[in-house]
Amino acid sequence: MMNKRFDPIEGRNAEIIESVMNTAEVSSLSEDLQFKIRLCVEEVEENILCYSGSKWVEVTVAIVDGMLHICFKDGGIEFDPLAKPDPDINAPIEMRQVGGLGIFICKQMMDGLNYHFENDCNVFEMCKKIQ
Image 1: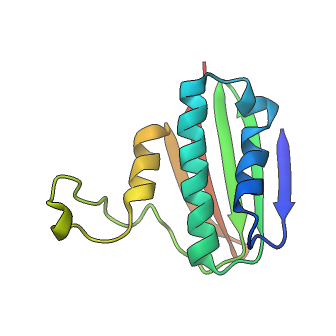
Image 2: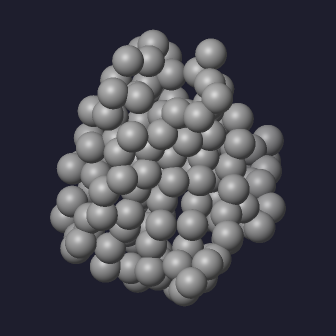
Image 3: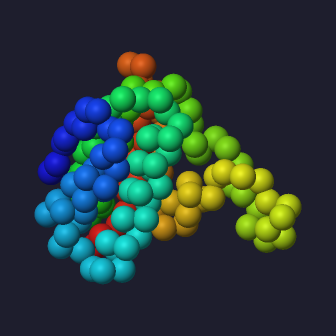
């Protein structure tokens, strides 16, 4: 299990992503699963970096009962990305709203996403079946 706090996070996006990808829990998975996990970790981390205003993030990676759990906790402004409606991916490009596509992709690639705000922190968890 990895539980690591990155403080500050500015300029450390690649380091944070690689820390997740290099855990024993993730590095032992198939290339296909690693691709999906990397894409989703990049999206969540980029959202935290660009929109939350947090100076830190704590990332936990664990496997519980055949499920990979990746949890992000940050001290930014409260925002539930799962509350926003999914983008209309069938609309013409010029008609599409900006934002929401990354979380939509996470919804498609992961088996579960959860958000809550606790003790003045955003807590976003994603889960993927690995067995």
